[in-house]
Image (cartoon, rainbow, N blue to C red; front, side):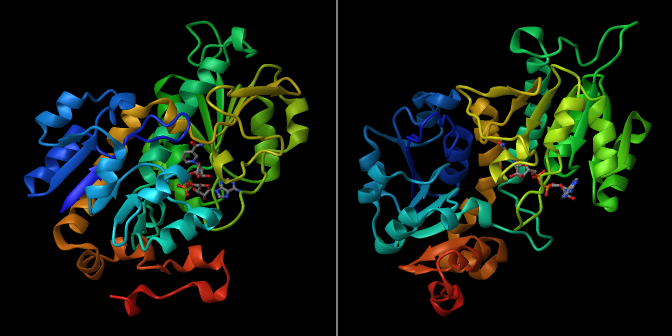
Length: 371
Ligand SMILES: NC(=O)c1ccc[n+]([C@@H]2O[C@H](COP(=O)([O-])OP(=O)(O)OC[C@H]3O[C@@H](n4cnc5c(N)ncnc54)[C@H](O)[C@@H]3O)[C@@H](O)[C@H]2O)c1
């Protein structure tokens, strides 16, 4: 198959859909890979590395779009890319179509067959192409929190680990899933006192077994949250209710009871956030202060570390991408239910039930009836 990868043109997006190692993986299986010159620069990958891996370098994105059968990206195409779509093109990327009617119409009109990373679901309900981004956001949340605890950023001026003879910082993590567990790992590694709250006792048991007596696990309810955050230096919001809205468990009234200069990193902000005081911020202007508490609420945290994010994402996309390239989309779907679950548009039809819900009852076509 002829596979393409172009530079991401979304504002502040420095990740890229394929690394040179990734290219080598496809080339080894007999595929041709077309890369737009400069596509990997934002993630620190030079054209020469892609060429050495066997890619064909193209001067323009248009050349790549025109001649590839499968396009591997990171983010959804933008409007200036829509005219480059062609019938039968397989688009493999993050899409979030339920919230994007313009993109959805463009893909349907052009009969692009799209496979959205965020909708590939394993039988146990896990989302293999979202997990790496949650791991990164979780680990980064402590790094960012530690930075904003510094006095010059409005923080209380405390070092997470302290030093002998001084108190360690108290880190409170709301939600112990992928983000929470990764935040916990880094906070423990940096020597902080860590308390983690979740409503899943099974999850708390896992964390307790994993970290032992180094951390405190607590059932997540209003009393336990309020008591924990009163003494917190850093609070991480990492709650998720799949398919539902994020509960606002970090209440505004807690801010007044907290230490001035404490930091709240609401990682869950991309799903509305778990703080009543949360509002979305950006990498350009990442924080605001409310009632003396520094809030960091960046919706695309992995964008701060594009090289790590690109490598982590492409490690995860390769397995399914190769199956699509080797067998064609239809056969790959028949062979692997995970890929089947990710098909959002096919030959002008909306083929993802959950996405179609956003567009009314008649919008959905069962992909089984199409191939
Ligand atoms: N800002 C970013 O850049 C970024 C990046 C990745 C993920 N995220 C977001 O981070 C959030 C967490 O993602 P995840 O992958 O860890 O999800 P996850 O499903 O692995 O974990 C969520 C956890 O929240 C727990 N939970 C649910 N309700 C709770 C409550 N009332 N109190 C305490 N815990 C509760 C669940 O039991 C679960 O363990 C999501 O909103 C996700 O979209 C944001």
